[in-house]
Length: 179
Image 1: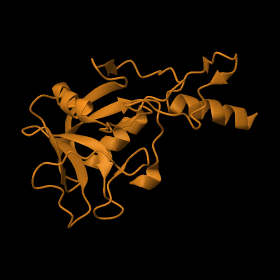
Image 2: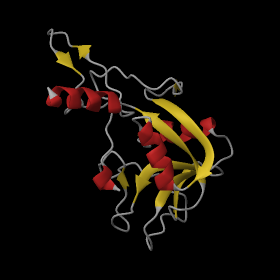
Image 3: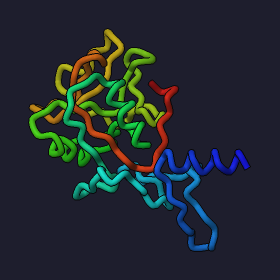
């Protein structure tokens, strides 16, 4: 019985709803789902907190955090919702997300806090889409990534610096060993 309760709680923690597949089986256990271009897992119907909204052209739901805080505090705040800092997967997401907090530099869920120069997403994988600003990245220190509001490019800075942030609800679990 405890196992069932833990599984149900884990499903709620990450915002998964049980959905039915075409063959009558159920999906939505957060297992090895494949994702689309914006990261939403196939077969998972998102059940995001009410404070999250859809953004035209993107498949995830987002919430802007309009308080300036460090990267880790921002990530932990997103995690309390069962989500994570926005993971920038493509140019569309990079150019669209700044509209949620116009004029502000925005923390994203990518960092090299474990190994200098190896940027990983909070969801685990090594980042493959990194549209850096001209002078970035600074490969001399462990830093966190943000969207520069002037260039709409990625930059990195000391993770304790104050920035605003955007949380992303996409049904993909956080991998705390990646940061």
